[in-house]
Picture 1 (cartoon, rainbow, N blue to C red):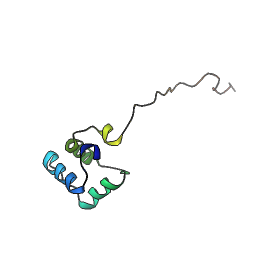
Picture 2: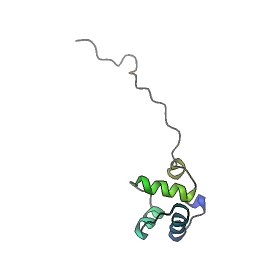
Picture 3: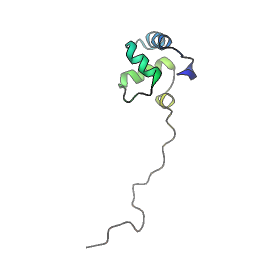
Picture 4: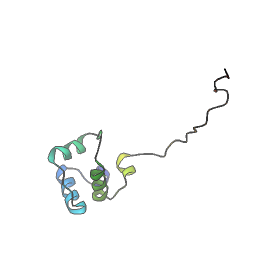
Length: 81
């Protein structure tokens, strides 16, 4: 949140209230400011993105997905019975 110039819980609470019309409890704001969340309601994520003017990827720092093939690699098939 520092990249959005949000340094205190009060600043985050004010942004959520003014930009997203959303309220979070003081303990929830403190938890968001001090540690990465383990889980989050979609409604809260949307409010944070609106308030901070960012995307979920920017908020969580998600990078591009790795390319994964669902096809089995040659030579890994089970031999016929």
